[in-house]
Image (cartoon, rainbow, N blue to C red):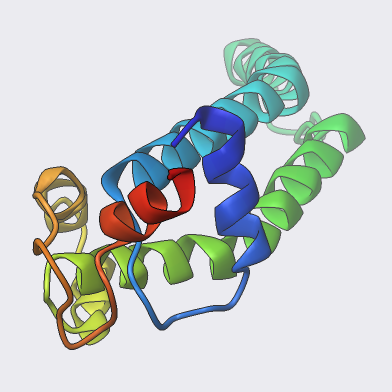
Length: 153
């Protein structure tokens, strides 16, 4: 499955929590999300955060308790809002592809709740995402590799 094809598949199955997802579908989608969120972060948040940090440091160095505390720049607030809205929009398809990937490894989708545990979530994503899927059909549906191979013939 190609990069564009996997993104299309995940977004077309926006809220589909049943079935199975191939490793390539899962990892290409995660790469796309990481790229989008990184670009937005560095374009919208870092400049405002740098300006705010500089203003706060100058305030602290001045030592004048009567001076007003610097306000957060509007660009930083807008940047946080945009990045948060994009993350919120991608939350449902991300959860759906995680559940489908768990189904491919013959694990229940409820294990996705373990991703709420800090640090453990990163390790689990790596392990579950890299695990080979169950060959052949399992309780969650047919093997996506076999379905793709049959469609190619």
